[in-house]
Image (cartoon, rainbow, N blue to C red; front, side, top):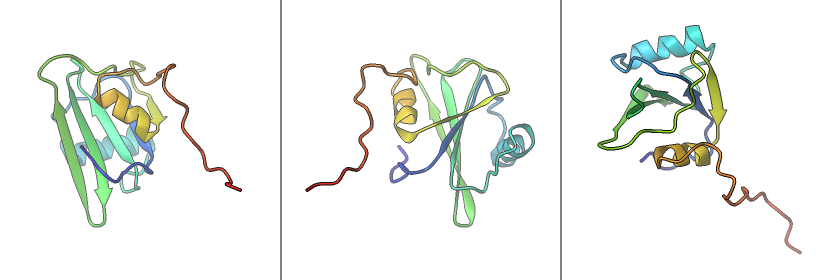
Length: 117
């Protein structure tokens, strides 16, 4: 998986996306449909109609990465609000990639820094 990206913002393009789109097509979709900057340090995640394939678009230094994931069995628990974008944290993205829903009521709360005396 994508390592060292825990601090980045993650955006999910809800509903289904035509994954025949390449880097340029996905970047245009981000800019025109969602008013997001594809050159930012965020991860942008897209899912197909059958919910068994994902593409993640990522800008780094001077070029794009396009990560692709195909499940052999099962489906991703993908948000259905067509034409919308949802911001999630990296932890929720990991849940989604592991086949879990975005909201895990039994998960431990994310820890914040505290002062140690």
